Length: 285
Image (cartoon, rainbow, N blue to C red):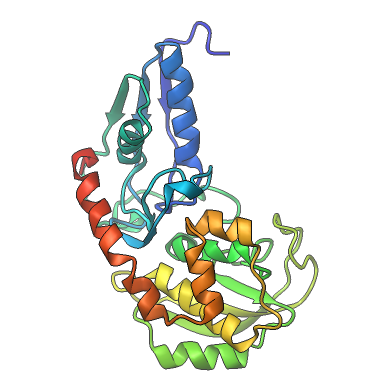
C-alpha cells in the first residue's frame, strides 16, 4: 500500500482531548512509514482549546485507541507535539518532522487566531462542544446520552429517567467556575451511539461562561457524581468503555462509592504535574 510513496504528510485537526483518535491514527501512520523508511511530516495546527492541562493521567495498563499515552484528559498540546511525545514514549523508529504553526501561542483559542472553525467530526459541531469534550466524553461510558443525534452533541446530557431538578440543585450549589447548568429536553435522531433514538430525553445543558476558569473534567465528574448519587437505581456505567475513557478503573469506583469530587480531582494533581515536566522537551510553542 505504501509502495512508491516518498513522504507521508499528516494534516489533521486534533481537538485537545486525550480520547480523540487522530493521535492514534497519526501514530499508526508513523509506525507503518517507519517500517518502510518513509519520512513523516506533520502539518501542525493550533490546539483549538488552548494550553490548559486538566484531568487525570492515563494509566498505561488501560492504553487503547481512545487513550494512547500517559497524558491528561485535556493535554494542552498540538498534534505535532503529541507525535514527538509518542515517538519517544512508544519508541517509534521513523524520521519525523513538524511544520509549526506560525504565530500561535499556547494561551490562544481557535477563535482568537483568525482561523475558521471547521467541525472535526459530525458530533463536534461547535467550538463550544470542544471545550466540554475533555469532560463530557466520559458520559459515553454510561447509560446517559451525550447528545449524539441532537442539535447540541457534547453540550448536553440526558436520559428518559433523569431527574434534572435534583441534579441541578446539587450542581448549582457548587457554583463551579466558568460553567452554567440548565434544564433542557432533546430527542436524539439516528444517534451514532444507539442511545435513546427518537425518544424525548430530560437533559442538562452546559454552557461555558468563562473559558479561562472552566475545568470540563471536574464539571463532568461533578455531574456524574450528582446523577449517581441522586439516582443510583437508574444510572449505570458500561465498565469497560468507561474505564478506557477514564484511563483507569479508579474513577468509576470513586463515583460509585460517593467519594467527594474534591478528593478525586485532588488525587490527580501530582501525576499531572509530573506530566507537565515530562512533556517540556517535546513542546514547540
